Length: 130
Image: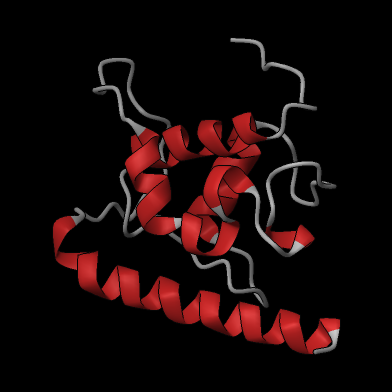
């Protein structure tokens, strides 16, 4: 199978999986139309279950997707390397790709926690200043 066909098939399966997961779980996640930084009093969020539910089907366990442009490990980052930039991508998605927006499906503190987890997969990135 050619690489282009593989990519198209993988992207299609990924999109189907994301839509299916969101459809099945939509009633369990409160919506948040705004992306605001979480308040300092916001409860801590464990991003691992969120990652498994919303991200792993396309981006792979521990960010090791079979397609380099969907991996979070040893890649060239095209949308920024800060957790704030990653949170924006998670919230707004990327037009023209299977990456859909999650700002209406996840709370801001969940998006922030996911962004930090995603960033932690690439050990080449320097720690962010707090």
